[in-house]
Image (tube, rainbow, N blue to C red; front, side, top):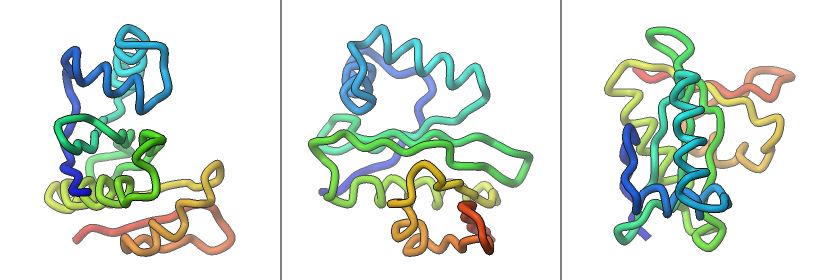
Length: 136
């Protein structure tokens, strides 16, 4: 299941329909409102696309000029357990590496991400839910 990563800036109607399914929302209008809310807060949004449809979303919060924190990653339920989230994460890592940005992620609400983060080169901070990855 090859997934491509793309940065979302102004999703069209089909993208909003797809995102409403990924985020389990009522429709395009609710998805558009969420996207505007997150972008207004300064978050960068990355989507995973498979077979012409968005199937995953990763929210990234720029911390400073060379660091960003993963806020959330969501995969459409029907495509879970097929490496969609891992492929999206790897695509975002590649983009951050090109920009010289380090990444962090707090998995307090999602401990199931620990294995994926470890495989992606993140290291866990001692006695913490915070994981870091330096992109050099």
